Image 1 (tube, rainbow, N blue to C red):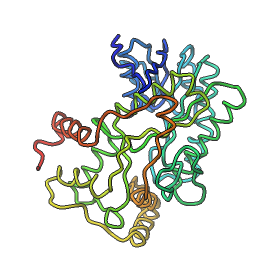
Image 2 (cartoon, rainbow, N blue to C red):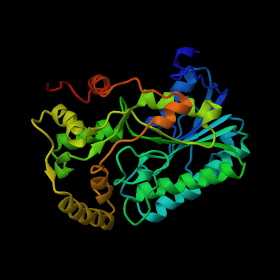
Image 3 (cartoon, one colour):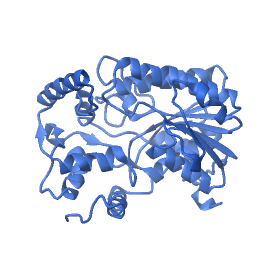
Image 4 (cartoon, rainbow, N blue to C red):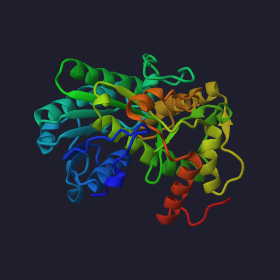
Amino acid sequence: MNSALNPIGADGQTPRIPKSVFVTGANGFIGRALMTRYRALGCEVRGMDLRADREWNVVAGDLTAPATWSGHAGGCELFINTAAVVSLAADWPTYRDVSVQGVRNALDAAIAGGAHRFVQYSSIAALGWDYPDGADEKTPVVIGDEYRYGVAKGASEHVVLAAHAAGEISCTIIRPGDVYGPGSRAWISEPLKMAQAGQLILPNGGQGLFTPVYIDDLLDGTMLAAGLTEGAGQIFILWGGEKISCREFFARHWHWAGRKGYPPSLPLPIALQLTRALWHLNRRLGRANEATPDAMLMFSRKGGFNGNKARRLLGFAPKVKLDEGFRRSELWLKETGVLSSVKA
């Protein structure tokens, strides 16, 4: 057991280490990182994902069909639900099936299995894209016809908080910032592919704000929230505290791709019209593509977040600054052969 991996809060808080942990979305970027961290601490780890992985004790299944996997969670003390529709292009029925009914299914599996704590991974997207700078856990969640991913995340939080309020199980909700680092598909490898293809386009000159959190810091915050009594019944925004323009964030990918300057841009109204037409076309053709109006709105956010609650209750203090996080991510891209060399 590597006890050094158990985080210590800024005020000396030390979370309890569970004997066993169950993770949904266990093969994903965050899910596998959680399993790796808890396993290194000596915990028994089990999980579920669309594909089984015998080495990691992961069974095949999804949130909408719990009968195929729920028994595998039996006896686990901590249940962490990271499984979700990881897309800005899905339709309403899909979001409802996974983010509402699917989350209820996960709660039922955790309760039946005797879990002591249920941790739901939501998202800062629950606050929408037009939230005020310095938004916190009291800022209203987004509703409406746009930003379906965010609306669905807000709905998932309602399901979890209702279970906690009813005394069914102790629950905690995590709203991560934009999670990046070695292994990140969403914010490292996929934007790089788009940059290499010349398809990385930002709205409004890339002036929208990006709110990154390095994966190791997110793991620390999650463990504190899941293992401290102060985390029960709470929502926590976990981000790195360094807001950066999308132009500057994705300039790294642009340069990694061997390109000069910055990614091209379109005015937001034109970008919305273009991606709306592409979204409808891709739906008719059955093609998966994340060039959507919601993606353009996500890249038009205007502010960062207030992290005082996580600091006050958990002692959460991010350690990895953005430049260091990018350095580690670049090294990973080289080590995995994605980049043979990187332009300065």
